[in-house]
Length: 301
Image 1 (tube, helix red, strand yellow):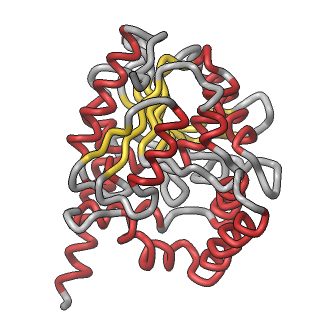
Image 2: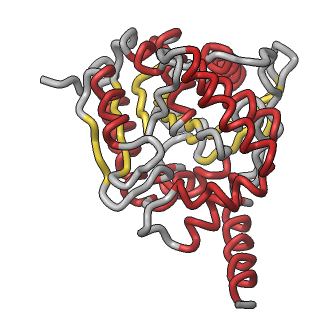
């Protein structure tokens, strides 16, 4: 029994050492707010920048395996969403997706990124969809991984119940408790011990206020509605073993986006962490296609 904590400590040390190659940075925005982020690759590369948006229980550090693989061919950036890491929270107590999308635009402006490929995982897909609907000219492609659809189109009773359930859980467990109790749900039965340790590590570092605001965002959002207004290139991907945003739920998002759903075998909700080779290949292929033919989309024929 005593070997388990030691093994976890070794895994954490290895992951943190790997992450140290991509230190946290901060952008000061004109609105007197800060966005923290991590970056790989070089600004001088001709390839379009790749911007990665994490989910509700995660952060910029979760994308380290994609930094390792994709940073050699293009500039890769992952933010800590408002209220995560050192990023300033949004002002609204009960924010909507556009509140976060506005910060994303300001951050990209500060970095001098006029056009990019945008990837959103889970709650990050909600922010990505709102940004795409508001600023389609800024995107060469929109890739949604296990997207959360939000409950904005549901009844007030459903929205309040979903919101309050998660807020109570946060209050009772705190970030460390969330990580211990909820991180396993993010992965399939096939996930490695290292993947499990990495999901726990990221989830344990969420900030309660930022997580609470993101919970309101989830209750207020309607990703399908935003995608119906976006005419650019888009793809939707889900893990076959995702029990949080299930393939059935993601099929509805794909239909709203007018594309075929891509299903990755042996992957759960945090597929890009537990099956990094498969997801990195998907992201790379999509990014290359978006750069070559930015005006086209993979619509259902």
